[in-house]
Structures are given as C-alpha cells and as structure tokens.
Length: 128
Length: 490
Figure 1 (cartoon, chains in turn cyan, red):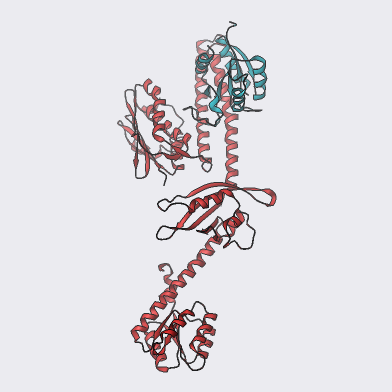
Figure 2 (cartoon, chains in turn yellow, green):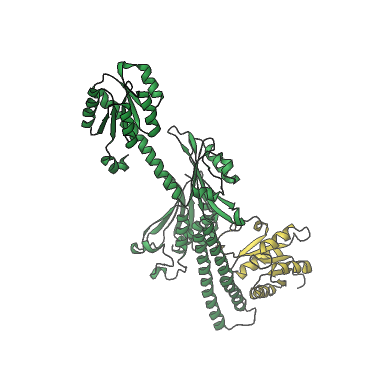
C-alpha cells in the first residue's frame, strides 16, 4: 500500500533496526534505516519520513541532539520523533525520567527492551 | 575544665610574696600554705625580680611601698618577663590612687593593708580562678590550633567583618593563597572564588532563628599546571550566646579523587549498559519478530522454545537494568542532584501509574495522603523508584481481590511513606534478609512470582543515601507494611 507512511528507524545495532523494520513492514509501513546520528540526518533529508524511531545512545551525535535538531528545524519540525530510551536508567516506570530539557521535545518514547507490539500501537497513533 | 583533671590535680599554683614587712610575708605564707599553695617570699623588689626571672609564679603579691625598688617598678618588670603572671598589689593606708594606677599598669587586683586572712583567701582564690581560666583558654587555643592545622580538610573562620580569623594550611593551599599571613586579611584578599565568597556572605546574613549549613561544590583551578581541583564546601555562621552572628566557619574537602572514581564508575556503568544490555534487547526484538511469524512460518514447538528463550533473556535484561540502577545509586551519591520534591503529588502520580497493573489483578490500589504535606529535598528520579518498587512489590505479593494502600504523613521531622498490602506476608525469620541483594523469599506461595531480588536493596540504598531509613512489618497471611522515613530539611 503506497499510501502508508515512511518511517525512519535509527539505532546503532543493525539487528535491532532489522527486527523493528520487519515488524513495521508487516504492518505495511515503508521503512528507512540509519545507524548513527549523522546518517539519520542524511536519511531525513533524503527520504523526508513522517516519523522517526530514534535511539538515544548512539555514536556520532546522540539521539537527544538529533531530536533537538529536528524539532528546531523549520523544515523538519513536524516529523514525529519517538525516542528509544535505555541510558542505564530504570525507564520501566515513568515519563519524567528523562528531563534534561532536550528530551521533552520528543513526541513520545518507548523504553528498551522494546515491546514491539506496544511500539506499533504508538506508531499507529501518530502515523495512522 | 573537667577534661584536664589529671594535670589540675598535680599542679600546685605557686605564689610569691614581695613585701618588706616580715609580718606580712609570714602571715601570707601561713594562710596560703594552708590553702595548698606553694608560697615563697622576697624582702625587696630586687630579690623578687631575681626570683621571678628564675622561675614562674602564677600569682605575685606585691607591696607598692618598699624601700629600694618601688612596687611600680617591680610591676613593670614582672609584666615584661611574665605577662601572664597575676599580680595583686598590697597597698598601705588604703591609697586608692595608687591602687588604681597599679591596676592601670596591669595589676589584677589590690588588697589594702591591714587585711584579714579571709580577705587574702578570697582575693587569691579569685586570682587563681582567673589564671586558671586564662590557662584553659590558652590550652584550648593551643589544642585547637594543633588540631586544625593537622586536618586534611581546609578550615577557615572569619569574623563578622569578613576578615580571616583563622585559616589552616590545608585551606590556604586549597584556595591557592600563597601570601605570608592570612589572619586579619579581608576575605577578598585570601579567597578568590566568587561562590565561596557568596556562601560566606549568605552565612553572615543568616537570621538567628535560622541555622542552615550551606553546601556547594566548587571547582578551583590551581595556578601551577592549571590543574583543577573539586572541593566540597560547607559554611555555617557561629554565634554568641544571644544568637548574634560572630563570624563564619568554612570547611573545604578535596573530593577530586572521589569525583574521578565516580566518573570511572559511571563510565563503566554506561559501558555495561550499552555493551551488555543492548545486545540482549536486540535479541528480544529478533525473537519477537521470528515468533510473530514475520520471518516465515514456525511450528508450534519452535515457537514455544523461542518464547521461553525470550522470557529468559527478558529476565537477564531486567537483572542488568537493576544492577545498573544499584551501581548508579551507590556510585552517584556524591553527585546526586537533589531538589525540593513534592512527595505527595509524586505519590499520587505513582499510584495512578500502577493502577492498570493493580486492576489486572483485581487489587484495589488506593492512596491516602493529606494534601498539605511539606516537600522533601531529594532526588526526584530516586523517589519515583522507591515508590514504584514498593508499589510493584505490594501488587506482586498480594493475591487477587486484595488491597494495597499507599499513605504518607509527618512523623518527628520525617516524611513517612507507607505501602501496606493485604498480601501473603513475610515469615518472621525472613524479615531481616529481604533487603539483602538477590535474596528472595522462596516458598509455595512465592514460586510463581518473578523478580530479581534487587528491588528492595535498591529502595534501601536510596532511602539511606537520603539519610532516611526503611522499616518493614509483616504478618504471614495478613499482609506487609513497608515504611520509608525521609528527613525533612533541618
């Protein structure tokens, strides 16, 4: 279905990116992949995704920075950003765990280990 | 004075009587020797001075009117040799002018001739008390100076005009003061760090009904090699008996090494987080994709095996997470950022957050918290974790249809959070061990409850890191109550 949205998945572990993409594709989303923050920006400019699933801890520019840049760019600020959070913290409980100013700009977050079904629910909520 | 009992007992004050009248000399000696003093006599001023030059006398009874060297001349001389000796002048004919002049020149008191033994005893015992007090103060000062100069921590006192009243070598080194003498200098000339100066201002301005220890962490660049040291600084005012600020005391502690170790530990923790846990997370996602049949059809048997594998990895991943939490809490104590936290509202949020989990088990999860409780200075994320762990535990260990109540109140300067359940309870013999790492109560009833055994140790570490304490009461079959006490700001 070509009217399905394009989703960019960014994580430095290709296995995780692959698994998430397979799940997304099974729901008929189109996917793009990136493995660090710099690549993420290349893909954003190239593919103009509707939504980005963004890991926080990555080499070459972390997820918070990428998220911040997306939200501050006039051209791309409407892209939905879902953060994958797992920075050695108990993210199992609440939302206000990650509140270093930048993080609050993300539209949503999902803690690692990712519950793929839950991720799909969140994605559907934003991308239809 | 009690602390110097030993030396006091063995010490016999020595008194010198200088008078040209034999009757007075002998009379004084008799009366004072009965009091237990060592008394010596001199007939003339010249002899008296010679004796004083040879040995120390605590008290000198000095006749003002003597042939030869006069009492005034002797007085001046004695003050020159032993300024701390107490001199009582004996004045003939009750000449007030002379007595007053002698006191202006440093005499402690005067005794007019003729005097009774009782008068002599009173005046000498007053003088002894005075000299002992001086001695105590001198001893105390000496002890304090040695003590303070020996400390590895930097200590500085200022007076209320912000001049340095005392500063030990460690302090001067830490603030990089290399000048000769710091005592008496305005604080600006000794301390360059603006925040430290600000703390001293703030301490001096503290109203008397308030007493707070000001704390801060300072980075001070050492001039040589441009190396930076990190200091933990604490500053308090000190007061007189009426509560007026007399000055400030600042204590500096070099925590550079601790900070470095802390950083190493944090680095290690995040390394573990990334390198150990992330692969597990990926494996979980991969297994999920395969189990969902997205990588081709699976037989029921294959799926069953993979699901169980996934469950094991999930447990491992949870364990890593909790270990990391514990490591973080234990390493981050010094750096832990604290703020004023409204625990009551945090409590309501946590109860709301866990509501779904409770409902799934048909457990009534309620909060009972008065609305106007004060805030607590704490680390917010830590407080969330304490509440979350206690509530999760209560839900886990309470059978369907039970009740979990989260309440709060103030008890003797402590904010008390209480999580009670109507669960299976904890056997008495297990109570002392439930806060041990990895310890889990194992019996028929807990067999199907999963966990890492780190939840309660984490709660305990956090509460204790906040200078609080945790308490548990339980009755098997009836339920358990966990109480966390957190100190309100002092």
